[in-house]
Length: 219
Image (cartoon, rainbow, N blue to C red):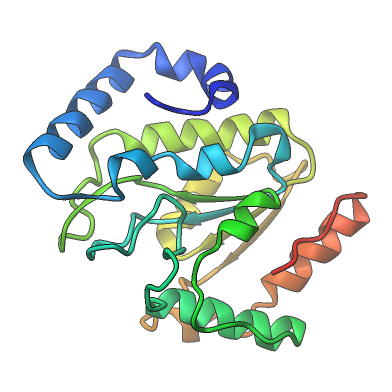
């Protein structure tokens, strides 16, 4: 896996597994035979932009956007000049409501979050074009569980945002006595009204980070 060297060191026990080799074979074949997002050179963008020692917040998505040009390796984020998808639109609206700040709804690139220590991690890192969930059940889940558990075990006072049932299921490997876990519904239009709207996760995150002498995130 062409992953950041420090992350590779942290994940070395997983990378030696047969299941990892099977995942690599599957993904290599998918990129060769289908249109897959994100582009292969951006597959591990979340890890190259946010080092292990920098992680202070983890936001967990499901799988990447499945339309052309939308996914670039950061959960919920879109590249410059790409229209915000509905989930990200609701995330921005919640930030405005929660923090009283004005967001730029023409810019959905969340690289600035990643650079501040927000790991934007999809549970499944790849998807076939126009086929959401197409790479579910092929091994990514074990990989991302391993990532989350390493952060839980080796880092202190990290905020985990679990939005929707898929993300909440990843919470079983998090030590909640060491970290803050915030759970609510998914920000998509189908789920935002069930709890995401008004959840105030962004202010809660910054308050927690400040309480533990960490730098709050500029959302």
